[in-house]
Length: 129
Image 1: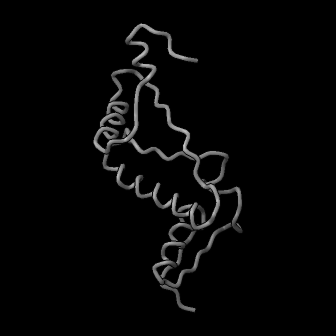
Image 2: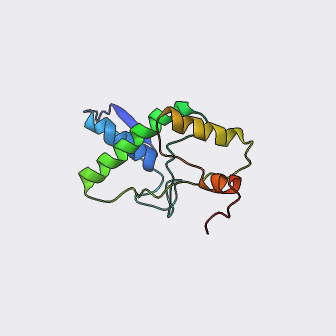
Image 3: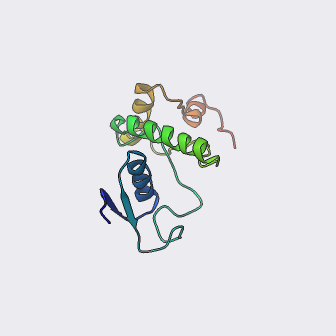
């Protein structure tokens, strides 16, 4: 048999690559050290995280927003709830460049973000528990 694409590793990234390559009409072979589904990969665990605002810089935001669209599409196609939006909390000193980048990337892409604990602390209030 001849393949257009051979994917080594069929975890979450490899499986996604295979899925979209197949949708594009390619003949795909996927191989893995373990029979999927398994608990041996980096994709396994009770939780995973997608951040829309990035401390590493706003260059990642368009990529992650597209990834979010694809997760939503997968949920619609499969009829399975594959993503649960719960929010993210970033903690650090007020002088943190990382947190400043998170805020800047949120502003640049009009993402919902806030600093309720910081705002409460600046007002002299006790943050909610």
